[in-house]
Amino acid sequence: MVRAVGIDPGTKSMDVCGLEDGKVYYEKIVETAKAAQKPETLIEAIESAEPFDLITGPSGYGVEITYLKDIPEHVLEDWYYEYILLTNKAHIENALKQENFGALVYYAMTASAIEMKRRNWPVCYIPGVIHLPTVPKYRKINKMDMGTADKLSVAVLGVQDQARRLQIPYSDVSFIHIEMGFGYNAILGVNQGKIVDGIGGTTINGPGFLTISSIDAELVQIVEKWEKADVFSGGCASICHCSSPEELVEKINVDDNCSIAYNAMMEGVLKAVLSMKASVPTPKEILLSGRLTKIKKIEEDLKQNINFAPVINIKGLSGIRKVKETAQGYAVIGDGLAGGNFQRLIQWMKIKDAKGTAMDYIFHPKFKGFRNKLVPFQYSEM
Image (cartoon, rainbow, N blue to C red):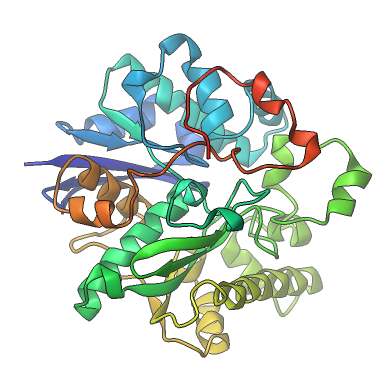
């Protein structure tokens, strides 16, 4: 018997999903704000799933498969901020003073790592899309976010989902995946059952609900100084001053800024999907997942404007009642890594073969010497 637990570090909620021999035995949702204020809330939710063989921990931008037991406790906090979250403690503490919502997520994720280390739990951290050998290196140049670990996880779930529904081998699976979360949107490309490309939440051309996403390099130059907190603002919520995606949709016809924000977001997603056809020319389906795709208008608009393949809501694991698809994907990966029912899927998608860090493909001169400032930790180079 293999018991694996996956933890999705969502912007709105942290979802915990437990699998026993590939079947769902545990689900728990913890509000991210609550987990940040009281990290023990998330820890208690995980404890309720004991016993377990492996926990797939919140992995941010991702790393090659790394086990918490191998991270020395005295460097864990800095390692987590720098390698998993691509920031540092000072930036997050400053963002917390500004009551930045995204910083709450990062704080909660880091606190959970420290608490799990203290309990000596069997935790591993997983890759993002950029780490995978199935993504050609030329697509990675000067990128860090091609899809974070949670986006990779939901694409893994997508491969299992399509293979099961269509009764086809993993080698025949192909789709473009639209993941629209409370904070970020992302587009993943899967061909022959492997992730071959990704447009991450900070590189997609169009705002997410919270995030600014990709920005003009001229804007970077004009503003000059940027902080991690700036990644979490500038999106639809900033444009139309709404507190939820539902409110955004409700005000489209009565508030010009809401209309502008919504159209910018949706067209950005559509452009990203169309551009992904360069990497996945003939997808069998377009898969939908994420909190925003559960909103009827968003779902209908996506299905109306994408006409080159069927647009399908991902079904997820049998028996799931409430946790998000990303948490299910985390659990599937944990099950596979622990030698469970999804072992062959994880082997096929080469998750174990992921290498390096999200910073391995930056060639801009400004990045020179940056690595020397990081907490010393050995990862293989590209």
